[in-house]
Image (cartoon, rainbow, N blue to C red):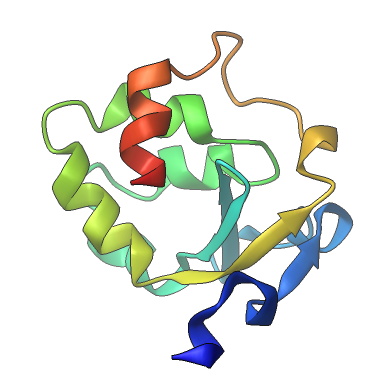
Length: 110
């Protein structure tokens, strides 16, 4: 269980995260967590385009907007692609102007 502690999870600099922005190699930043969703693009129900457009941004608000009613299921699925925590996430431009809701952040963090 010690391997699952947050201090043992990779910390990935924002500059590295933003490089992974193509259909062949795509990482998402959602609430300070990094997900390698490359293998998921081909089967994403909403298609790959929206995910590709979100690459290189903080896509937290966009994820909330596009995963309303199926949020908990989507988060369980997303967690399979978790690869680490972002360092310097505050440098990332948000995908949407509106910040994520408090309720969404509570759900993501629970």
